Length: 414
Image (cartoon, rainbow, N blue to C red; front, side, top):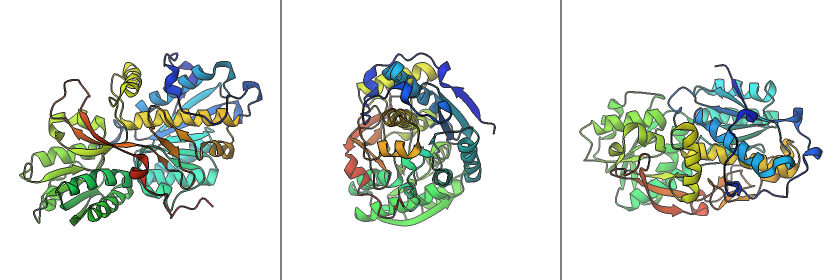
């Protein structure tokens, strides 16, 4: 699909409290007159699913979140901003790795993108990481879950900002298994993300004293899961785990709730966004526990930002929207501190940076593997919502170190 360009200068004037720009940038603001920017401007590429099963979880509205970051950066630094001309270019990767690869190459080479953000779908995400390494350009992934981005496929120019499959498994699989859900059958989408989810969940279930009877691969994407749900019910498991996301998760849960297994077997969800609950209905997910990277109504700071986002989009933000905002703002802060958009200089500003902002709590850009570790949350879907979009109870906060564990030994930045 044809790429679209959104000029940063046409955004609605920033009205945000500067408190939201509390990402502690290394170094003070540089003089705008001494900056060294490629082509005299910053270009931020947004590459994601804008028409398929992951459209609602991130999609076009992530451009709004990135524009909010641009507005807040300019409001904070004013005339001292190193980056005065900032634009966003967008493309739809259609959840296909080959299209993601070609669109990333186009963004870096023809559209002169300094950084690419988001890229849900793990196969697409890994393709873009290859381009970032080859082009020596920044890439900050928000939407994909694969641990390979900070493992065997890590590189100097790639950062993983929001979550990974290991984080989801440590929170959800451990909690459910320890609470008595000791026998599982898992259904997963048969591509990089689903395969990684299956591996991560199986590891954590086993570590918590449980077992996985079957791991069942399903096509991606799909709108018919009846056969896979029936097969997952074989052997009388206590838990059926769906490792799907976005539109596929919605279809899976809808069909599970229409099956004879509802009420007899616990349904566990590996990855869920607030938009999934909103689309299908809070009653369809009631009582479901899952790990969330961020929740819009967690505290006053999150809600204030979510109110700004809702005023522009008429919807509440998912954690992917907030993650794109945080990644964009911290990238611009790194440019400000470096006084340049030179990729190596920006990487140097990001590595090891400790961050507390609207998305990252107790955050740190881990130098060893470029995982951006932060607190995450074990959440439970409410039985009913007193306010539209307020669908989650936060059961507990999982500290960053516990959620992420040690740096992946498979990562080598050389």
